Image 1 (cartoon, helix red, strand yellow):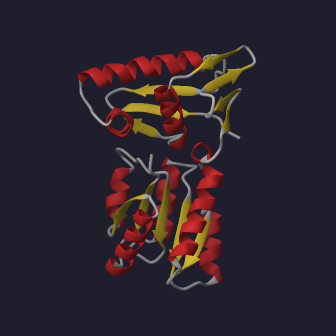
Image 2 (tube, helix red, strand yellow):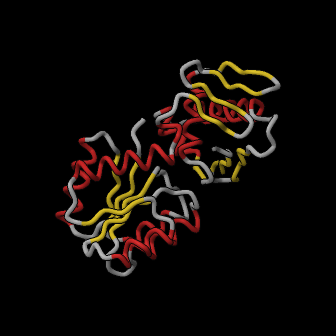
Image 3 (tube, rainbow, N blue to C red):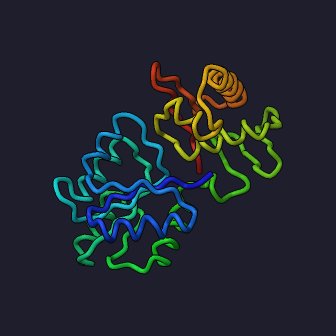
Length: 228
């Protein structure tokens, strides 16, 4: 499954270059020239694993956009693009909650390296074989969910759903987004299948009350997986 990156860059030439390069590196990139379009997404579906925000944009600057995103998605990884490379920009970004910054014009290879380092720190499901989820441990290689009170052997689809939830942790996810990404189809039968899988996961994680897969009526689910 490709990592989905939100790119906010109003410069059409630079934005297109970044999008094409990142897609060559096997990322899935949604490029927005108008940051106001992103603010609307926060009210509905937000299927991204990290964001790259240009600091200097019209209407809504990168810092203001970051504050809006982090208000709704508190652990969302962010990298800032700045043309000025001034100390005040760096400090402002870090205070807001940015994971990194890079000055424009940037070396695409360095940008990719920074992105991968951020994802390694913030999206453990993408890189680690064993992942701690509250009182549980998920061994991806063995398809095994372990807990002091007992272990569960997972199916491939069950593990894919857990990893997808980890990648969208502390976020609301629509049913359509889950079905489109994991089942690659969206009809009555796959919808019922998703309900069965959700019931199974709730049962598997029932020994830890801090782990929550909450249904949002008419929307989908809100995920809260405590991780280390």
